[in-house]
Image (tube, rainbow, N blue to C red; front, top):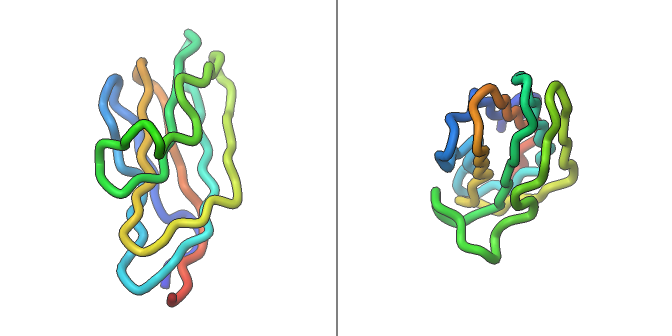
Length: 105
């Protein structure tokens, strides 16, 4: 079972990116940080999803503004086996890093 940093991505612009997938027969408690490394504000999305392209009901952040050099942190996310942590941004230069712990279900 993994713990600590469980996923990281230099998120490509205008592309849904899976940062973490919860393994079979486990659940995970996860936190995720977005960091805007760029010089312009951007918009980020975050979903706990069943597939790589989230449905509208799976978003927990949607086009949330992240100013230059700012951080957005979401904590206490619980993922079931097979669920994905999916991120999106309209601009490049965004880091998404997930930390957490996996536990046998």
